[in-house]
Length: 623
Image 1: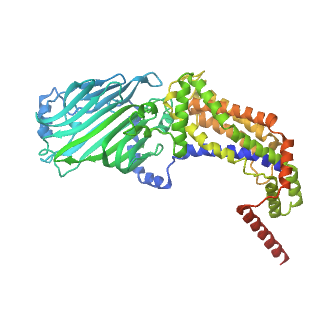
Image 2: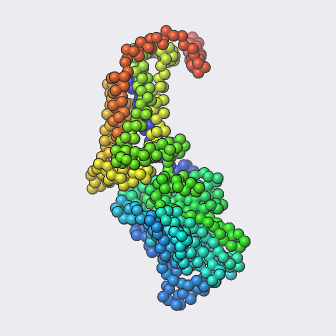
């Protein structure tokens, strides 16, 4: 019986870790309240389902043309519709802003960015990474004029003027009422910088734009797919925002539709896994309506978009004029780059994890891996980091095995107690606790080391899928350590597994199987006791679950678990065969028994409760 308890401590630790893994997969599932909200929205979602299917499986459309500039009648009609803003010359075309890192195209129609391309990065299929392309994004101001016209900047033409201020490129886009009266979008791009200063201002429009009606800002983006697995990419694609005095929150990554209204918003991040489109401002947006719609229903090579993001807020007129300083960030979700913008706090948009787990990820594993990968191949750096982590945790592992060894030494005495009090569970438990107290042994000490490792486990779970350092870095047969490795493509798709076979998860599962074989082998040879977990079932189920879960996960994470479990096996064998001496442990326990033990308050309280229960049982029996 106690041989089973010996091994159960290590198994409980593994089950706890496995439970945390399952929790992390499902922690973002909708709450009952969210499910109710989704039910209320179901008719609306179903009505739009066909439309969503079309936009997620076909190429994005070109922006609509407000007016055919070659048709004089159409131009005249357009000018009549926009009223005073018809002073602006009507001309199609775009203006280019680019530096060493970023390529932007700004359209005359709408004055907005219609193409944002990373110059130094490509997708999994070697296409340049686009964050804005061919109509997937829209930025607009909506306002009412004093002659009661409702206008949107999407419908207006802007006149471009590109100049330089030192090394900074300055693009002024003006929707004019006259030469001295206009609405201006001003873009300023610096060399070697992903951040673009963006100012929206008006001049001389206090008699044109109605001050009694709100000016609304709308920013909509459909996230463009960049990764091999669209479901995996979608898991780390979320709308993140800084609000309410510095709080950082996220909309759901899994709900079909998630909506929030927030106040005092400093920045909005439309994260697309490893790349982000961010709109930030020094003058915080007072109230913002946010929404995120999930566009991924299943793994499909035809799916082109992941999320449909939308933001709506209002801008205030000051003295009848508009002035709002903002910033556009189109670039990598990389801690090294985002940390340069400390005043804006953009680095907080990276999903390091919550609480102490995120702190460990950000300040320990991220810089440590960055240091190792600066002079080692990326896969080797993972192995070295794994070795260091396991060695750092080896004292915890030692404590766990020491507890197991003590329990093993006490097995004969525990068996004797069980036989002596086999018909009295209360007395059996009481005598067992007395023995543990005299011997200086805690039956829970085998679980505590596993709990101490959970922050490390979770931090690494978040590190590997989100570390930009690993993106498109190869090792052995894995082409990309931030995505799954493939050794064989299946002609069909298996639910929860995929249409491919990844080798690193197989190796990790095998390593876990052997580890559990070593820790549960003797237990399984014993007769299964009532109320005890089926160790054989756990031994087969856990590696199988990991095999399915990690087949579509980052191969770097599976590599870590494979190496980590191998090292754990070696450490376990070394401790059992060369470090722990059961004879010495037995002698120490006998010495502990001779020493008088003072009960703490908890132990005394438990003993008194059990004695009272035993006395009541005897009294009840005599009655």
